[in-house]
Length: 232
Length: 250
Image 1 (cartoon, rainbow over the protein chains, first blue to last red):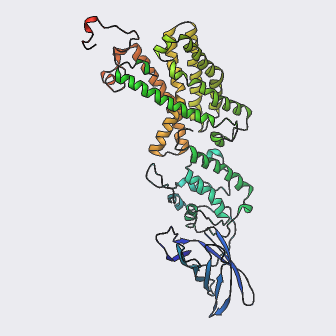
Image 2 (image 1 turned 135 degrees about the vertical axis):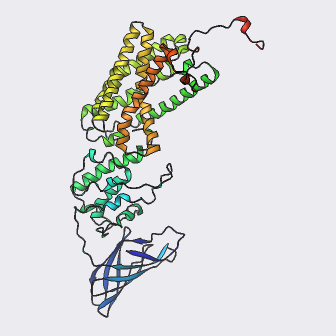
Image 3 (image 1 turned 30 degrees about the vertical axis):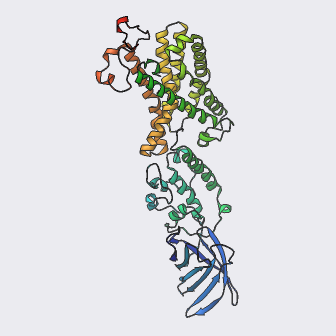
């Protein structure tokens, strides 16, 4: 997790996001890597030195993105990595974050299921003005795995819009998609197997997943437009 | 429409309000139909009918139904008004033929086809099949009665026919209300309104007819409820008051 240390409470900040930090290559005195967090994949480049039994590294992002900054981190022998990140722009909502990361290998597995706890999540930014309450997910959200089984209309026609949206996005999550959209990010960041590794995974979708995405999307849009309106 | 039988001041107001509400709902129905003017088999409701929109007969039935059903709505403004019938009998007859032909030849049979493929499984399919069959049958009986000049029978069947016509509006109103109050899952609410949408209307029509035939059998508390028709105000003949009953002010 990429945890806020210094932040402006008056701005809409996110306390913590899942981050993936990847060291891509090392030359004699330079390190090249990239990070993926909150839908933002950014390269960094810097220097490294031996420090005790591990290494100490610094990596600066290119600086042409509003959210660029500088990473400073240490690796230990057990593969653990700890460090900080400081934003270049001091007017951002969060200007400093820290992280403690485990070594982990990403691999796509279509059979990963959402934990049942997701069925109790409340969706961010989905307040229902009419009822004066937020939108909660239901246990139906974990009923099907759209990466592993072909969905039929009858399977999903009785599902709420929020459940449909999370179910559809679980496909992207399995491929390691890093969500820019807070509503989905907050749901999937809580899932153990979820590892954000890319800001665009459209090329990796299987034919089955594409068919299911199209079907779910139809019901989502229908629910969005017609569920609480005068019509069908 | 009960508007014509509201003759008192507050009753007349209630009639105007009902007609205005009906006009508003007709406008909404017009808007719903206009979503399909492009004949796009992937528009609006059809987005979730993709299992059936591949079939030519379903598409033909859907688009005919979406537009021809509108022919049944104008009848609500005119056909149940006694003064309209008295003043413009020819217009009553012409509008009546538009209503009847629209249902018997176009909207009714196509509604039956759509009912067979309704979302929600056997329960809602049965509800919509009965609705389509009843709509056609009541309208057909109303036509037969009119051609035999059996006006009272014609009126009775038309009450039933129009009760089912109104289901286009009441079904959607039920859905709107149930969703606003209880947030049920989408297909549960659909199965529910498939039945509520027309059965309640038909019961109301039968209740009105019962009252017409047996006004004295209606429990008293119902008659004193607001908006309920009052005994003694049913006659379409205007009884002139006796000269000595005319108030001095006039």
